[in-house]
Image 1 (tube, rainbow, N blue to C red):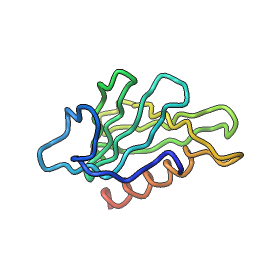
Image 2: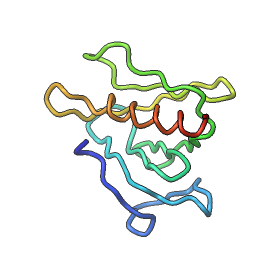
Image 3: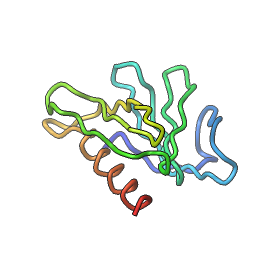
Image 4: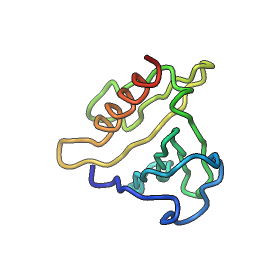
Length: 119
């Protein structure tokens, strides 16, 4: 995924509000290719899904019950995070390299993390 880069909290630009004190930034997915969502910050505990205005929704990996992949490989850039409380959170991943779309690689990452936490 060309749009993901490893970082630490000290190299982040902008506000990372919403992260716990013991939460460490691992990297960021630059989602700035259209659509309504900004970047996605990946931490050791979860995701900070930021809008283009840099405010965001914090989702802990431990709160994710299921990860639903896009159904259509051509048109859908959204993976759905189904939380333990039943709330469904859309996560937009828009990058691609030719016919290979980042959303499927990101979905595999989330599936693995959630599987490791829940079992």
